Amino acid sequence: MERWRLEIPPCPPAAAAALRRELSVSGALAQALVRRGLGEPARARAFLDAGEEYPPGDFEGISAAVASIARHVQERRRITVHGDYDVDGVCSTALLVTALRRLGADVDWYLPDRAGDGYGLSTGTIRGLAARGTSLLVSVDCGIGAVDEVEVALALGLEVVISDHHAPRADGVLPRAPVVHPGVCGYPCRELCATAVAYKLAQALYEDRGRDTAELEAELDLVALATIADVVPLVGENRTLAVRGLRRLESTARPGLRALMAVARVVPGKAGERAVAFALAPRLNAAGRLYRADAALELLLTEDPLRAQQVAHELDSANRERQGIERAIRQQAEAQMAELGEREAYVLAAEGWHPGVIGIVASRLVERSGRPVVMVALEGEDGRASGRSIDAFDLLGGLRACSEHLRRFGGHRVAAGMEIAREELAGFSAALCSHARAVLAPADLHAVERIDAVVEVAEVDMALAEELESLAPFGRGNPQVRLLVEGASFADTRPMGQGRHVRFNVRSGAAGARAVAFGCDGRLPVADGEPVQATFTLEVNEWNGVTEPRLVLRRARAAQQPAAPSPSRRRGERSGQQELALFAV
Image 1: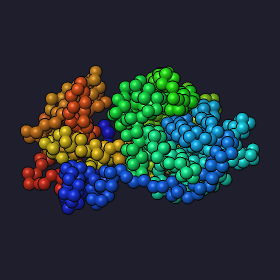
Image 2: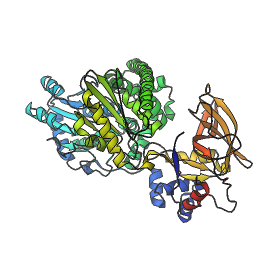
Image 3: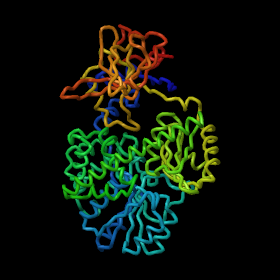
Image 4: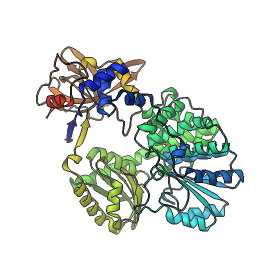
């Protein structure tokens, strides 16, 4: 049984009342805003308006990158944009290539092969680009750690510009080239994805060339795709870019994206964050995971609708193949986890695992286990690995602590890649577990269900479902609003989806609301009619032309004490301490 603890941050009644009064919002939304640190009406209004944005000049040193690129554009010398093989790398490449073409640049691109080249800049690639006439190499979504590789490029006569968002080397040494990086360059939004960084670089270039930066608004569909796919926090400027970009995506004129929506059965006018995360991004990623990412880049760049349809179907087929490979690897990995038993972190390895798929599997296993997971695809004496982590554990910091066992590594706090020799696996596994044991508290290994609002069943209606959507797009840093329903019990439980899911009603007194639980093998953890402590998200469900509000169960367990709502309370104004007392377990 999953271990989880309830967390209900304080919600001062006066703060919630002020938001209800000044923003004309419901008690539930007021609670959510207060608990997310947006209790000041001005801050809450700014978040809802999604208007936070900064000029590209806020990147320290961006002028040097702009000057180098502008000179090569003016002199018509060959510029190569070097990207990466995931959605963020492909989108940032497509965006910068398109922007440079409009400026009249002689520009081509290079995307590395996951199996042949590995991640980032390589000396072999640099030598090849120099031989084919590249004068300026612009890296996007990679390069900040490529200190030695940039020296090779400079020795061969290439100029280099680094546009990236990954963590620099642990020793702080940067490549000897102009750098555009939100963390390194002191940008106010430090967690931009690589495509957003490329967008800012393109804005700076347009300003330098006297072009209207409004021309780049059409590229925001790519920024939204990458921002959501790369799982950066959807707050601050990231939220602004995602909101504006999703609007662009809904009406995109890009033949490739329209074709991809068609094969993925995404209605263009309803291409929200879920469509990106679960339909579009996996298909764009599939090419780079199994083969080369060039097909995904071609899809984004082509202006031929017929070719767009052909490539979209190729990506759809590759995604189905990826799903089959993922299922097989996951079964083997879960068997290894069961054999290892409970531990602070897992290092799993096997011959034959596809290095392009293990990262997805690691993510699934982290969700299931609540532990950091590193998966290693072995080939002979060598291994390529992908790791994913929980919020409480800095995976990149863990790899640094165990670096004596690794040949190469890089990434972020919650996701990283590495190369390792087979003979180092046991030592690395022991070192990572030891490090996790030292930095994690027991409570960190329990899932936390952080509540945004406590509501009564009678409050659950279409108006509330639509109002909570004003906080979208949802994702890391801005999850869907989590509701704790007071005095609830379940009723009318019925399996659905060939027994994989359950539909049921949530009742409290005479009030009721429709609900569903996904992936529960047709069973709920609490019997019908028993008092339950349950948390939900609320969505607008559309099916067969019918639209209705629907609760989606997140977690549930029997209530240790019935929690009937107090008839005297004003909705949305109970303090967090009172709620904790009512729902303590």
